[in-house]
Image 1 (cartoon, helix red, strand yellow):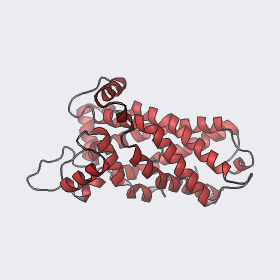
Image 2 (image 1 turned 180 degrees about the vertical axis):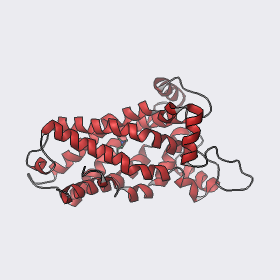
Image 3 (image 1 turned 60 degrees about the vertical axis):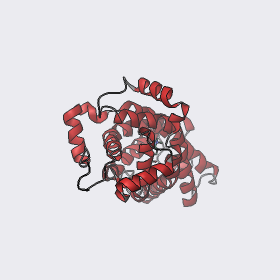
Length: 285
Ligand SMILES: C[N+](C)(C)CCCC[C@H](N)C(=O)O
């Protein structure tokens, strides 16, 4: 599957955007911060620069797997629907409906692979205890492996999939839209029958990322809250209860928490993702 290594290149931009990810998760799940700046200042004062990189070794390791599933399933579903290979698609472009269906299928399957990694990331990012300071309270989880083992022991195997329904709802339609936006922008700025230039791929990929993150943010908030639930007993009766009680307590604004940061990191990450995908597919034809 040519799409497998296509997932390696986004590793660097993802590393560079780790601090944004940590701040976004904390803003979404903890009410102690007044905004992005307040959260950055408090995290730095309390946990030093390490606080921004908590829980990131696991997602970086999972990037390759998750992106391979997404792009692999997307390409193969599109192949099954249109019977045209990637190279033939410039001459015979697939319909947006088929692109959407293939994107949703990729999104659905990658959500299930992503669920346990994402849960561990969110749990670790939310530990606000400073590391390695004598006398300070010790964090509940010592690292990703300890976190996975503790969840397994305390909440059972299904505990590793906590919040996965919200994750599926977050990723399925928005990844359909992700590929439609990418293809739409590429077609708009590429002469008929030709491959898009690298600049077009970067810009179209970046905007596809922003569009999908903007629409994914409401379910992203609910997903993060469901993943944190279960840590100190169950607060929510389920996903709908989580939505209703978050809305009652914090108003409509709660569904947009973390949107600015999500969108800002989405541009470089997804520009690099699509560039590596297109580049490797052309290389391996
Ligand atoms: C569907 N949703 C918006 C959640 C993700 C879409 C882009 C996925 C990409 N790996 C990234 O991290 O940005």
